[in-house]
Length: 195
Image (tube, rainbow, N blue to C red):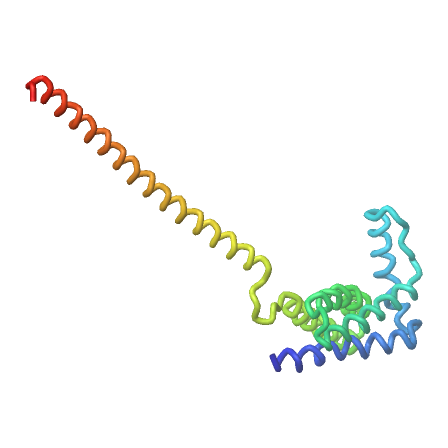
């Protein structure tokens, strides 16, 4: 659809630009990222069996690389749902690291950071919508549910048909036995009568 072809590059542009800018000068992002990287590394060390790097500059570069790579693939429509999910996962720590408006005492700086925080929240919302966009095609969950419902319906119809056939056969068999009994009784009556 034309809208997706226009909207994806527009949504991805700020990520690609920001990622390239950060890769060219990662030191400018290190002071803001130090706190969040420390918190994430601490949590990761508790949860993961391997030690996680605490090198803030390295994490800033990794985040920038994700933004460039996922932004480019999203803009081109290559694995758009996965790319949108990667960008969504990347924007959360970036926003928490770079736009901590609740810590600002200067009203102008607070307003600026709050505006960027809300802008990033809006981008996150757009990315989440893009991550679940199936481009008008039914989702895998819907397809599985639909196939299972159709299979159940077919099985129920076959069961009903088989039940009706069995009922008819049972009635036919009952009539056949009764008819034989009547014929036998008639033969016996003829013999007894000497006919």
